[in-house]
Image (cartoon, rainbow, N blue to C red; front, side):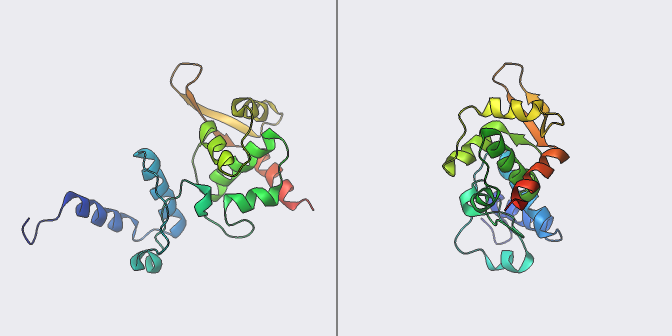
Length: 177
């Protein structure tokens, strides 16, 4: 490789740095999370961030709640947030985790399988996550709405969003003594 040639890996890193440089930290995190999900890569936050990331506000995408997440206020990680909300039913568990990923992590859509996986990591998996989502959708007003379905089979991945009523319900849980 010549002195002026860069590897494709290094070119990608330079392009990524340029793309993220002027963005706010929360926007950087959403972009990195999207890239991680788009390319099927799990990014685990290292113990020591690169100095450039610390000074520019660049974050790393986090797919696992154990590494924390976008915080601010109560509950800096999904585990802490979950504990503060204190959900008791499967529907409440799903709603709290969905709220976390949508409003704290900036996910544009929620997948039932992802939510149940994260709840299992916390030791709070639900018996039937599909039924829990269906119950949240069936409430009037609905706490969660289905936004789309990838595929035509019954087992196809469904995408969801927490509604404003669902958001209020979680915020009431957090405010309860």
